[in-house]
View (spheres, rainbow, N blue to C red):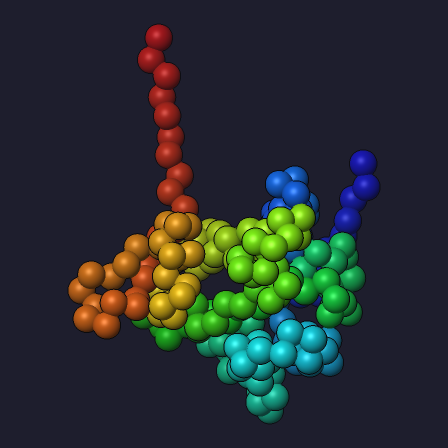
Length: 186
Protein backbone atom coordinates (compact mmCIF):
# COMPACT_ATOMS: atom_id res chain seq x y z
CA UNK A 1 0.00 0.00 0.00
CA UNK A 2 1.32 3.45 -0.91
CA UNK A 3 1.04 6.07 1.78
CA UNK A 4 0.69 9.63 0.62
CA UNK A 5 1.88 12.30 3.00
CA UNK A 6 -0.40 15.26 2.59
CA UNK A 7 1.20 18.57 3.37
CA UNK A 8 0.67 22.20 2.68
CA UNK A 9 -2.90 23.13 1.96
CA UNK A 10 -4.51 19.67 1.75
CA UNK A 11 -7.75 19.64 3.78
CA UNK A 12 -9.78 16.49 3.09
CA UNK A 13 -10.30 13.61 0.68
CA UNK A 14 -13.17 13.73 -1.78
CA UNK A 15 -14.71 11.37 -4.29
CA UNK A 16 -15.84 12.30 -7.77
CA UNK A 17 -16.75 10.01 -10.65
CA UNK A 18 -15.64 9.19 -14.17
CA UNK A 19 -17.84 6.79 -16.14
CA UNK A 20 -19.69 6.12 -12.86
CA UNK A 21 -16.46 4.82 -11.31
CA UNK A 22 -15.18 6.63 -8.21
CA UNK A 23 -11.88 8.45 -8.45
CA UNK A 24 -9.97 10.10 -5.64
CA UNK A 25 -9.81 13.84 -5.36
CA UNK A 26 -8.75 16.27 -2.66
CA UNK A 27 -10.16 19.41 -1.13
CA UNK A 28 -7.33 21.94 -0.99
CA UNK A 29 -7.29 25.23 0.93
CA UNK A 30 -6.14 28.04 -1.35
CA UNK A 31 -3.88 30.87 -0.28
CA UNK A 32 -1.82 33.57 -1.95
CA UNK A 33 0.92 31.10 -2.92
CA UNK A 34 -1.59 29.44 -5.29
CA UNK A 35 -2.36 32.66 -7.17
CA UNK A 36 -0.28 31.80 -10.27
CA UNK A 37 -1.96 28.41 -10.67
CA UNK A 38 -5.41 29.85 -10.14
CA UNK A 39 -4.81 32.64 -12.62
CA UNK A 40 -4.24 29.88 -15.19
CA UNK A 41 -7.50 28.21 -14.11
CA UNK A 42 -9.36 31.49 -14.61
CA UNK A 43 -7.80 31.94 -18.05
CA UNK A 44 -8.73 28.41 -19.09
CA UNK A 45 -12.27 28.45 -17.66
CA UNK A 46 -12.92 32.03 -18.79
CA UNK A 47 -15.89 32.60 -16.47
CA UNK A 48 -16.97 35.53 -14.32
CA UNK A 49 -17.46 33.34 -11.28
CA UNK A 50 -13.97 31.84 -11.25
CA UNK A 51 -12.63 35.36 -11.74
CA UNK A 52 -14.56 36.59 -8.67
CA UNK A 53 -13.24 33.76 -6.52
CA UNK A 54 -9.61 34.29 -7.50
CA UNK A 55 -9.82 38.09 -7.28
CA UNK A 56 -10.02 37.64 -3.49
CA UNK A 57 -6.40 36.49 -3.55
CA UNK A 58 -5.24 39.84 -4.92
CA UNK A 59 -6.02 41.55 -1.62
CA UNK A 60 -2.90 42.42 0.29
CA UNK A 61 -4.13 40.17 3.09
CA UNK A 62 -6.90 37.70 2.38
CA UNK A 63 -9.40 38.30 5.17
CA UNK A 64 -9.50 35.33 7.54
CA UNK A 65 -13.28 35.14 7.27
CA UNK A 66 -12.98 34.22 3.57
CA UNK A 67 -11.91 30.64 2.99
CA UNK A 68 -11.16 29.62 -0.60
CA UNK A 69 -10.96 25.96 -1.63
CA UNK A 70 -10.34 23.91 -4.74
CA UNK A 71 -11.22 20.34 -5.51
CA UNK A 72 -8.35 18.75 -7.35
CA UNK A 73 -7.50 15.40 -8.88
CA UNK A 74 -3.84 16.09 -8.08
CA UNK A 75 -2.19 13.36 -6.00
CA UNK A 76 0.04 15.11 -3.48
CA UNK A 77 2.33 18.10 -3.62
CA UNK A 78 -0.54 20.50 -2.99
CA UNK A 79 1.83 23.32 -2.08
CA UNK A 80 2.45 23.43 -5.87
CA UNK A 81 -1.09 23.30 -7.18
CA UNK A 82 -1.40 21.94 -10.74
CA UNK A 83 -3.94 24.17 -12.46
CA UNK A 84 -4.89 21.44 -14.95
CA UNK A 85 -6.05 19.20 -12.08
CA UNK A 86 -8.36 21.80 -10.46
CA UNK A 87 -11.94 20.66 -11.11
CA UNK A 88 -13.85 23.11 -8.92
CA UNK A 89 -13.48 26.25 -6.84
CA UNK A 90 -15.57 27.47 -3.93
CA UNK A 91 -15.50 30.12 -1.24
CA UNK A 92 -17.01 29.95 2.24
CA UNK A 93 -17.46 33.14 4.26
CA UNK A 94 -17.63 33.11 8.07
CA UNK A 95 -19.67 36.05 9.35
CA UNK A 96 -19.49 34.80 12.98
CA UNK A 97 -23.19 33.91 13.24
CA UNK A 98 -23.20 31.55 10.24
CA UNK A 99 -21.22 30.30 7.26
CA UNK A 100 -22.23 31.18 3.71
CA UNK A 101 -21.19 29.36 0.57
CA UNK A 102 -20.38 32.50 -1.38
CA UNK A 103 -19.33 30.92 -4.68
CA UNK A 104 -19.15 27.45 -6.16
CA UNK A 105 -17.96 26.75 -9.68
CA UNK A 106 -17.18 23.49 -11.40
CA UNK A 107 -14.83 23.30 -14.35
CA UNK A 108 -17.11 24.31 -17.26
CA UNK A 109 -16.00 21.22 -19.17
CA UNK A 110 -17.66 19.07 -16.48
CA UNK A 111 -20.77 21.07 -15.68
CA UNK A 112 -24.03 19.19 -16.09
CA UNK A 113 -24.93 20.71 -19.46
CA UNK A 114 -21.48 19.91 -20.91
CA UNK A 115 -21.58 16.33 -19.58
CA UNK A 116 -24.86 15.61 -21.35
CA UNK A 117 -23.04 15.55 -24.68
CA UNK A 118 -20.20 13.39 -23.30
CA UNK A 119 -21.13 11.27 -20.27
CA UNK A 120 -17.53 9.97 -20.01
CA UNK A 121 -16.40 13.17 -18.35
CA UNK A 122 -15.98 13.74 -14.62
CA UNK A 123 -19.13 14.11 -12.54
CA UNK A 124 -20.30 14.88 -8.99
CA UNK A 125 -17.67 17.58 -8.50
CA UNK A 126 -20.14 20.11 -7.08
CA UNK A 127 -21.69 17.42 -4.92
CA UNK A 128 -18.25 16.57 -3.47
CA UNK A 129 -17.75 20.26 -2.60
CA UNK A 130 -21.14 20.44 -0.87
CA UNK A 131 -20.43 17.19 1.00
CA UNK A 132 -17.22 18.74 2.32
CA UNK A 133 -19.17 21.81 3.45
CA UNK A 134 -21.77 19.59 5.15
CA UNK A 135 -19.14 17.65 7.06
CA UNK A 136 -16.91 20.60 7.92
CA UNK A 137 -18.86 23.83 8.25
CA UNK A 138 -22.53 22.90 8.57
CA UNK A 139 -21.88 20.73 11.61
CA UNK A 140 -20.44 23.76 13.45
CA UNK A 141 -23.15 26.35 12.78
CA UNK A 142 -25.84 27.30 10.31
CA UNK A 143 -24.53 27.28 6.75
CA UNK A 144 -26.40 28.78 3.83
CA UNK A 145 -26.10 29.80 0.21
CA UNK A 146 -27.97 32.02 -2.23
CA UNK A 147 -28.67 30.12 -5.43
CA UNK A 148 -28.95 31.39 -8.95
CA UNK A 149 -32.18 30.28 -10.60
CA UNK A 150 -30.41 27.74 -12.82
CA UNK A 151 -28.58 26.21 -9.82
CA UNK A 152 -31.65 25.67 -7.61
CA UNK A 153 -32.42 22.15 -8.97
CA UNK A 154 -28.84 21.07 -8.20
CA UNK A 155 -28.95 22.30 -4.60
CA UNK A 156 -32.37 20.76 -4.03
CA UNK A 157 -31.24 17.43 -5.50
CA UNK A 158 -28.29 17.18 -3.11
CA UNK A 159 -30.39 17.93 -0.05
CA UNK A 160 -30.09 21.66 0.56
CA UNK A 161 -33.32 22.97 2.09
CA UNK A 162 -35.01 26.05 0.69
CA UNK A 163 -35.52 28.69 3.39
CA UNK A 164 -39.26 29.28 3.20
CA UNK A 165 -38.96 32.28 5.53
CA UNK A 166 -36.77 34.15 3.06
CA UNK A 167 -38.95 36.17 0.69
CA UNK A 168 -36.68 36.15 -2.40
CA UNK A 169 -36.75 32.36 -2.61
CA UNK A 170 -33.05 31.93 -3.33
CA UNK A 171 -31.72 31.17 0.17
CA UNK A 172 -30.92 27.53 0.96
CA UNK A 173 -29.69 25.92 4.15
CA UNK A 174 -26.94 23.36 3.83
CA UNK A 175 -27.90 20.65 6.28
CA UNK A 176 -25.04 18.92 8.14
CA UNK A 177 -24.42 15.23 7.74
CA UNK A 178 -26.64 13.40 10.17
CA UNK A 179 -25.02 10.54 11.95
CA UNK A 180 -27.48 7.86 12.94
CA UNK A 181 -26.89 5.12 15.42
CA UNK A 182 -28.87 1.96 14.89
CA UNK A 183 -29.40 -0.56 17.62
CA UNK A 184 -30.13 -4.12 16.67
CA UNK A 185 -32.55 -5.83 18.99
CA UNK A 186 -32.44 -9.59 18.93
